Amino acid sequence: MALGDIGCEVGVSGQAIYRHFDSKQDLLAHLLLEVSRWLLDGGTMIEAEARDPEVRLDRLIGHHVAFACAHAEVIDIQERELFQLAEEPRRAVRRMQREYADIWSAALAELHPQESSDGLHTRVHAIFGLINSTNYSTRRRAAALSGSETLAAMARAAAHCRTRAAPIV
Image (cartoon, rainbow, N blue to C red):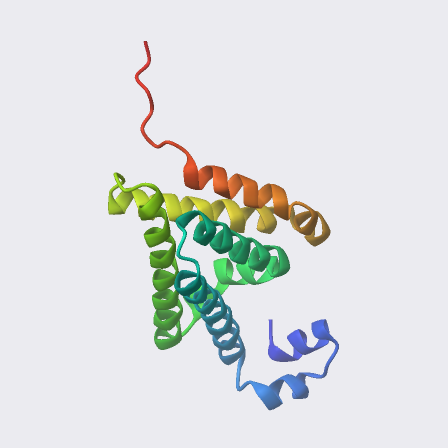
């Protein structure tokens, strides 16, 4: 899709888009860097302010669910287009994503001190997958917004679930 087509989709001329972005690549980089920065800044603020691990987890979940519900289309764009970014912005997006995931891992480590770093990493990405894919797959923003409480409760359950299965007798 050309920038002119993107302009038509949002109700402005292609020239208006070109006044702000040099190319589709530039627009994509701006979008993905901005949302990555927003998620990371929110996570960093929560980490600094919420000392209680349960409060921190609830706030991290709320932050991520709010993003996913309000911006499901951005999740879709990232899934499809991240690999098309030039190397420098792609690395910057990935770095911010790792830092954001590290904030989550640290929060979960306080709730699951026995869990390995690999286990925490898996748990974090499973929670992200749950939150991100639910809204992405529904493709109905109104339904996603009304389901945000359910989604947050499911993310909390994933964060707290036991990972070692009891032996089958």
